[in-house]
Length: 188
Image 1: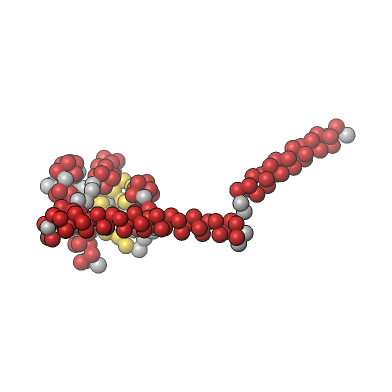
Image 2 (image 1 turned 90 degrees about the horizontal axis):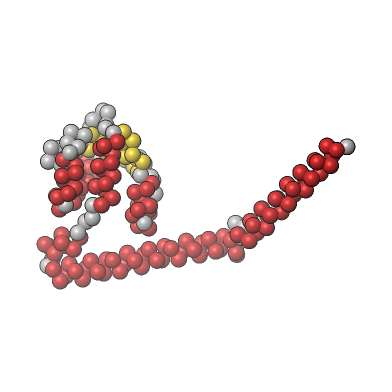
């Protein structure tokens, strides 16, 4: 677990070093302690005076980030949906700074790959990766649509929207009929 923590810290710091604005934003929060809870996994981080992260085991963090269990799937489907589902608690200033940095931080994969395998190969590899990711997202979306269609139309596990609408209309009609009946009974 310690190796995973060090890898995560190194990766975050690599991204932050590549974006001067992110390092400046975090430098203002120097000394802050952060706790990240992602299901059964948890990790403590601190922000140093240069605006970078370091592993920390602080007893009382300034900010706690709670990441949902389905974070990996949300990251694949929609990055904005992932950030909307993360819960922040603690110091408002630190939480706002972290939220801003994490929402706007982008990894320039092509630049990192170019340093290892060259510009052209990196460009082609990134283009291939984007194409594969797009195909995966489309495949997942179509699979979800097919599962919903099967559950509604073929297996009758779920009612169709038109059936729900008809049921709601019938319930409304019944409510009105009962109200009229109660009125007639109260007159007697």
